[in-house]
Length: 381
Ligand code: LLP
Image (cartoon, rainbow, N blue to C red):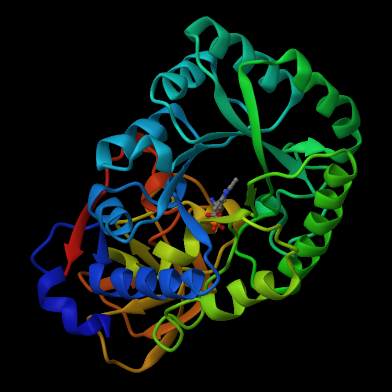
C-alpha cells in the first residue's frame, strides 16, 4: 500500500518519481526464473528506464541490455554491462553511434534496413572489425495494442520487409565485415492479448524455414519485448504473467538445436515499481467539472497526453467521501490531463497524489517544455 509511505513522501519536494526497489527485485526475479526454465536470455530494454539504481538491479540478475541509441549503449557499459551483453537496435543509427558501438565491441547490431547494413559494413571495414548483425524483420503481425505503439505491421517504419530478403541474403557475400548471427522481431508494446505472441511465433517459424531453405540457420533468435502490464489494478496485480508469456514461446516457437532465444523486455520489468508523486496545487470548479490541478504534468509523464494512456491515480492524503474530478497538470496545453471524470476522495490543496505504474516510459520521456525543472527520483528499498 502506497499510503503507508506517505510520511516518507512528505519529506521530499514534489513532483518526484518513487521507485519501489523491493517490487522491482521481485519482478526481475520472477521474470528470470520463468525465462530460465526454457534457457531463454532476457535483455532489458533501457529505453523504458535507464536510471542507475534500476540498471544495477537488472545487471545483478544477469540480464543483457537492449539499447536504441549510442547514449544508451554508453549508459549500459557505464552501468557495468559487458559489451558482449549489449544489443543495439533502432531504425536510425547514426555513423557516430555505429562507430562507437563498433569500438565498444558490442554483441550485436539489430539492423533495420539494407542501407544500414551497407553503412555498418563500410564503417566496420574502416575500423578493421567484424560486426555481428541480426536482421530485424517486419513480420506483419498485429499486436492488438494502441496504434502508436504497434511496430510489426507493414505500414510501420520498423524492420526489413520480407520481400526484400531474397535480394538481401545474396548481398552478404559482398560484406566480409558483417557476420549474420540471427533474426530479430518486435511487434509492439503494452501487449495484453497474448494471442499476438502466438501469431508472432507462427510467423517466426515460417521465416526461419524460408532461411533454412536457402541453407541459413542462425545461432540467435530474438523475439523482442512487448509484454504488457495491468495499469488498472496495480495493487491486486502488480507483476505481469511471465509464466504464461514464456510458455507460449516454449510451446510454439520452433527452436533449432543449440539456438539461443532472446527477449527484450522493458515495461513488464519496470513499470509496476515506479510511481509519480505529485502535490495538489489548486482545486478549481468549472461549470461542469471539478479540476484537480497537480504540480506534475505531461512534462513529467507524457503517456496520457501522447497515447491517451490510463494510469491509476490515488489520493494518498484523503479519506473523505468521493467526488468526480478532471485531474490535470500545470502545463499550457489542453492535452495536459491525466484523467477526465475520475473518482477520488474529496481532494484539497496540499494533498499528495500517486500516479501509478509509471516506472516504464515515464522518467525517460520527461520534457523541459515550459522550462520545467528535471523531475527527481527517490528509491525505497
Ligand atoms: N525491443 C524493441 C525493438 C523495442 O522497440 C521496444 C520498445 C522494446 C524491445 C521493449 O518493449 P516493451 O517490453 O517495453 O514493451 N513509449 C511507449 C512505448 C514505446 C515502446 C518502444 N519500443 C509507451 O509509453 O507506451
